[in-house]
Image 1 (cartoon, one colour):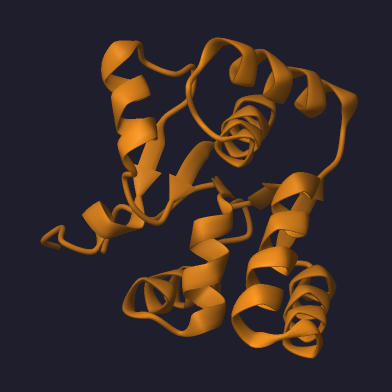
Image 2 (cartoon, rainbow, N blue to C red; image 1 turned 90 degrees about the vertical axis):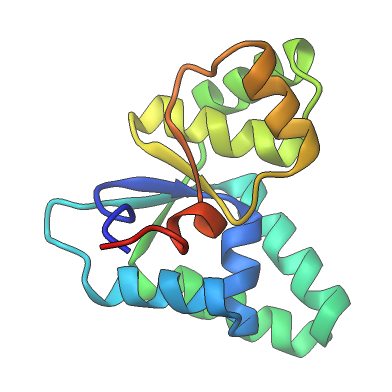
Length: 149
């Protein structure tokens, strides 16, 4: 999977795959293990909240607390919490028919000048990408997993 290189911004769906130990999550684990010093990994503060919520629903409060603490303590992922990201998230949500979580990921990627990484190409995001390109490169783990080296 040569495509998962460089600095990226992670969507909630990527973290869920990672924490649930799925095949796609394993790809993220390998990326984390092979991070180069110049590569950075970002997510928005909104993503942290959403990861907590989803893990809590799936596995319970203690599991969610443990995993989010691990994420925050790892210092692998930098949480971006700026007014600039908040406003760009709002602009995207106003103009695009995608979730606020997706908007937050894309806004963070724009502000950090990175690629946005989602687990899978969901219908709403695919529709918006077809309607008008975003200002950032968007990648999908599901597509990267099928690449040939």
